[in-house]
Amino acid sequence: MGLKSLTDDARSVARCYFPDAREVDAEPYGSGHINDSFRVVCVLDSGSRQLLLQRVNHSVFRRPELVMNNIKRVTQHIIAKLSEAGVVYEGRRALRMLSTANREPWFRSNNGSWWRAFDFVDGSVMVHEITPESVEAAGAAYGRFQSWLADYNGPPIEETIPRFHDTPHRLQQLEEAITDNPCRRVDEARIEIERVLELKELAGALARLENGHGLPRRVVHNDAKLDNVLFDEATGAALCVVDLDTVMPGTILYDFGDMVRSMSTPTVEDEEDFEKVGVQDSLFSALVRGYLSEANAFLTDVERNNLVRAGQVLTYELVIRFLADHLRGDAYFKVHKPQHNLIRTRSQLHLLETLLDREARLDEIVEHEVARLH
Ligand code: GN1
Ligand code: MG
Image 1 (cartoon, rainbow, N blue to C red):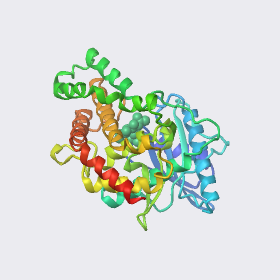
Image 2 (image 1 turned 30 degrees about the vertical axis):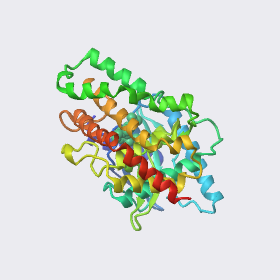
Image 3 (image 1 turned 120 degrees about the vertical axis):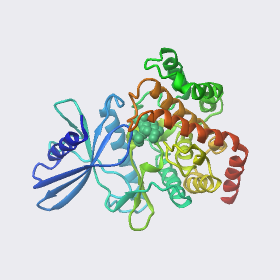
């Protein structure tokens, strides 16, 4: 469906939340690869109300109702934590999911689409520029999010996408795509395929820690990138973590690894000038500092000692996923230009090479930042 008619749909879905709205306006919002998001303004008699309205991609999230339940449980837990800490909830430190006028937690349209709405966080912006300041603030925001959830003991948080960060499984799916070669794209990706297969050992690194070394399973975000943090437009402070669809049981290393992947290089995920792509000490140390400022208190040694490894594995995993999707004809990630997933693969592979080459230095940075806290 075209973006225009989808935006029209968003406008009419908003009326299921606010049937009395005098006016409804909607515009596409954000740059997610999976769901479709809209910023909606509803003009009501009592004033304007801004919403973040999203159509959930239900071929990715096959049980949207479980996703919404998870989000509800997690956000309620966080709001309770804030109130324990004496913070009056004013809608900016955690998302608040809205019910439809019929008191349903989501809206299912006649064509089978799933929609849900949140209050738009007032005065919030996304920050796309990767600087030591933005990265340190985002690292702290994810650390805080995890620490709030460290004692979560409410109703179960379901695994909504099975084996989401199971890297060996992702590798197996890639190998199948190489064998099937459904779009005849294997040849153009030969060099990348060869390198990914050479690095195979890396795939099982986190799974080995979970099985033999007591790596704890917790409730984690699972998509911890800079774009999923909202910042205060006025002060630049990180307000809250969003995009909670993949909040599921997992290890904190999934989140920290994704932070390294998305915030330790100043470049975007699909940077085509590969020479610019690579981990920078100043960004990496800012990230570790921000994250540990909130997370150090609850981390175990096995978690703390594998932060660098996590960055390598999660970057490797995304290389695998982008490459597999390229070979399968771009069925999963939204693409905006020819070979987009191959470009993403190459860019992330460049980053991975630097994370591998500079491992000893990155471990030193972690040690240094841990020592500063004692
Ligand atoms: C997807 O939807 P978005 O853009 O926040 C993907 C993540 C990837 C990310 C890469 C459900 O997240 O796993 O790390 O793209 N989400 C899903 O940018 O697959
Ligand atoms: Mg996401």
